[in-house]
Image (cartoon, rainbow, N blue to C red):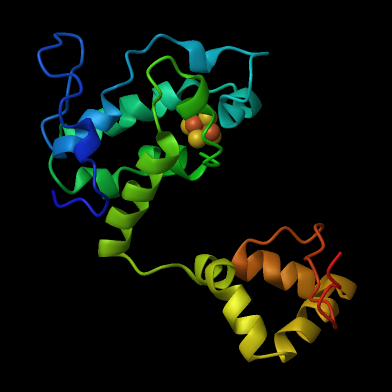
Length: 188
Ligand code: SF4
């Protein structure tokens, strides 16, 4: 597996540790995953930030430790498993990349960075969705095509357009989109 990020800072992590359980594939990326020792801190309530997706769903697989478990399963399987595993895809999708685990986990599991690598591997086999393109390129597109600003205002006023946006792009109809200002904000 060829990784897209540089994971060399993890090259010595878990070496010689019988409990590290480093997956077969993924090299230093796999070692970054294996820093989790399943202490369960990420599956507790009422402490710090970690982990919002676990706290909302109360599903173990949507905690950092649960994601590690799924990532290890995929990395111990064949190379295609990382991108083909739908359970893993759902778990990674629900990570909001808040970095709570990096700050609060005793072993500093960096799931937000692991998610970037995971998404980069996904991009090798499937193109970026229109929804992701829209959010990624909106600052450029709004500048190039001012009519898009008018379209956002129109969408915010029209329940029909908002529903269409929800159906086609997965943008919640009941949430208004931020509108583009006509003039740059004056400096304080
Ligand atoms: S970065 Fe992801 S896995 Fe880590 S605490 Fe935030 S939501 Fe949970």
